Image (cartoon, rainbow, N blue to C red; front, top):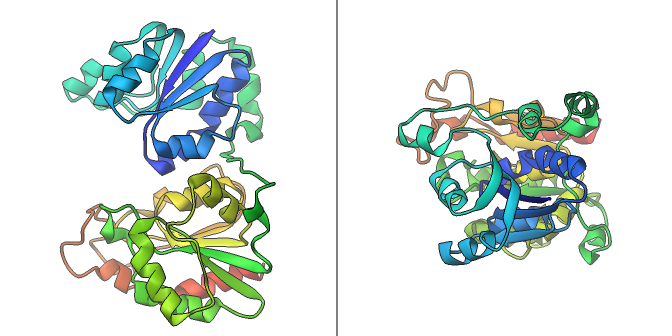
Length: 324
């Protein structure tokens, strides 16, 4: 049996789909499963057995050349955007499962909520009892990322370490707590017995340099790791602290405790409400910030939401978790 799965982004969405990928492999253990995704998807799942081939979509020609090499018994469109629908229109397949809107529904503007895992499995023509038995096991619903335990980075922390990320995706500047507050927080947290490691992409390099200039002996991995290496660092941390962004989901999926700072987005996105292991906490703006959550990528006023969150508030939550 040949199976094709499509999902391109975003980091958090790719992580929360982990139980779906795992279930597909569980029910089709001998299938040839191809995954068309982004570099994010490849970085997250290339060290798993979920997929036989992972293809990073870089341009339409190469992607179509790949998917047209095979005929597929099952196609899972787990993105349902214009790109995924167009690619699938060029594929030879027997059965298509869309996680949400079909191409026609999307064109005419009908919004369809994403299907849950049991529905996706039922539409795969699987035995209903086997689906019920599988879903009855709580472990099947947990979001769990794997990582390399033999990599040299797994031993790089010689003391308890909190991993910190100061950033968010490039277009969401409204999500970012002030760098000055991150610096003050790190100064309060760092002790001879507790280390701090910075992670992030090239977008956060300036932040990391500012922190490094103020706190010279900090561990700085910003812009220096692959996603696979980031997973290792997060898995070996005692805690992750950052804004509402993909690394919070990644840390939680690795079983690492998290503290997530929310600004322009609502706390219902917090990993504490997801199927993750570990202890997870979210910090939101003060109740009198009436514009929260605004869901605007750039703040149109003066970032009242982030200004209302104090260093002491975040520090107190972190200390409580560390001392549990």
